[in-house]
Image 1 (cartoon, rainbow, N blue to C red):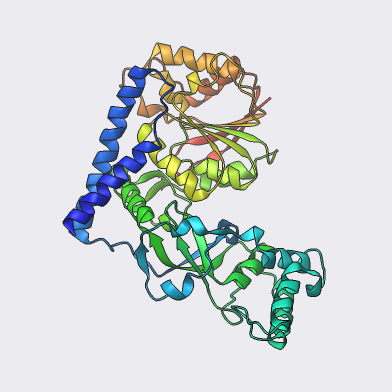
Image 2: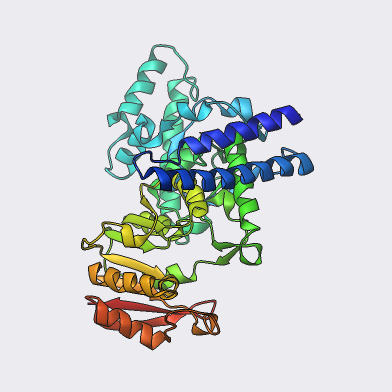
Length: 427
């Protein structure tokens, strides 16, 4: 057991290093970053290794039911349910690579054509494929004869019609009509469907917010990542992450900031499906949220420990936002930054600490060209008694932004959970 855990820890260490470095950068900065990142990753792997020895390898619970937005399940892992449904295990191997995209399956396309385009079942490729097999005397995995097949399609029609009439879509329960939705989590953190394809499809077509999904297995690499981020959270303020994690399997990790800021911002959005720049993104909460709304997101973060988790969470969320590692001052240096929305949430005060960073902030504001900036200033008392170049009060800070940027109107949106204020600044 001990030798196996050491082998896994070392393997994880080198697997993560492979993804992290860009050899095109300055050799000194690359070398220094390599040392810092190697030290961080090694400490993390050792912490997981020690945790496994102390609490056991299977200390993270499987066989859990999560309430999940059905659109978060994008892949299907065919033929695995019968092998795994009684195990509730941590699994190794490359099984996640054989996943199928749900939208590419003819049965999903048949559901779409039937319930959205109002076609008859016998007009779909799925129907023609199954009908051809059964009429020739062959059985399929789900149907033994044509009568059973036709009866099943009639039942699906009935269930869809019944559920569509219900007002409160969040309370739908498929268990009386179909089996539960079963899923596993692959090495990158993505939910893969293994059983329950019909209730999942109906959930997607009905635009349900959440459906119950039973998790029956995790990949071992995801288990290691989950333990890493749990241990990382314990080093944060009050042993909490800065922002709530959105992944269903990580939402039990303690956090400082919840949904309130995003709800206020979303309520005050005047544009959609455009571009968003998040300065000081931490672990990418807002990029995930804006990505779900259809925005093209750019995520700036300087802390390389955060970037380690940020890159892995991006894979788990399966959303294509761009991560910009390093200082915002170096991003497209001396060029205008054109984004529809800029998030500057509890970040600009870090640039008031020295004269040089203050001047860099002034230059950055001149380069920014957004439609709107959501600005959350610091609490001034945090800097009192500290040797900082500037310590603006909220009104002074807003005046500083207006003076040095293309923005000229301000709207107070409210006070946040920690006492900070949130503003919308527009042209």
